[in-house]
Image 1 (spheres, helix red, strand yellow):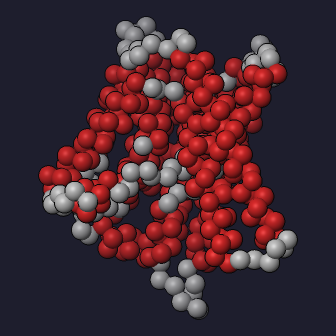
Image 2: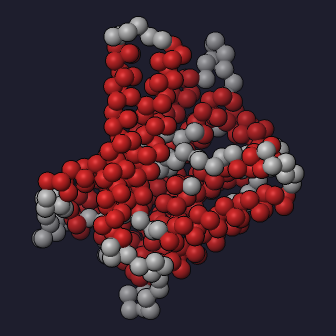
Image 3: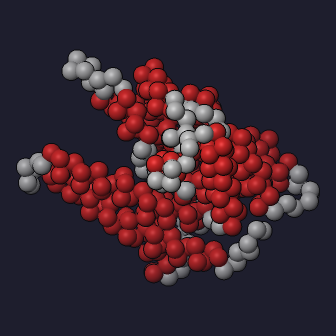
Length: 355
């Protein structure tokens, strides 16, 4: 659910930015209403039956993410360094700077976390001693992270260079002109989060569609590198409720029919939209979930599992490498949520519900 809360907040704020930029003298509309508009789209898209049905959507989301990232750093570069730019830490106290550092760790952990769909992809790719599945998987991972680096690093370096410590969580919010370019970039963001929301949402409903597994197998057999590119290119979410319908069917003995799918998916989208409207804190939520949720599943649990399975020689290079990752991941899980909670508390002082 953490992923969908952040998507609702981002999509709604980008829609509002489009409206405000296109109508600078228009009536002010609450961000809440734009989150509702964004969420309403998913009441329809969430009922697409399978991964094959969202192939075009996820591809469009991938293209859009490259597009708005490029616009973000190029427009910032064109704007130039601001006369009042300040590169000092935002917090004036040492303790505040430490907490901000913790928050930044969570942001980084969120941005470079893994995705559970990758495991399903590799499990269904045909593999043989002559053509092991690890080769296309590894190539896909390299391509994906190269694209991620192309999207993230220019935005981070140029955005901070131009705006300093006054840069917004979403650098596009800091930009105002040219209006048409800012509108286009935020439209790209909306399309991207619509696609990435659906890419992450469909693993949540694996039981009702009886052809789901066959569809995934067909997709990854034909487009393994494409899916590896599309999924890691998103902001990397790990589904929490991917067994909702499985639980309803297996434990509560609901029949896996169309009505169950409609009720479950609609209720889930409505719930995430409601919480996203209530707590639209992009930066704080990003850091909190980056540390609390993604650090274990991405940075140290896989290393623990690897050590338990392969049992490398103690004090060997692989043994040291995995233990370093475990320690760093554990520290991320502890420290990042602390900084994020402080940031959320500070933001909540001036926050009005459904504003």
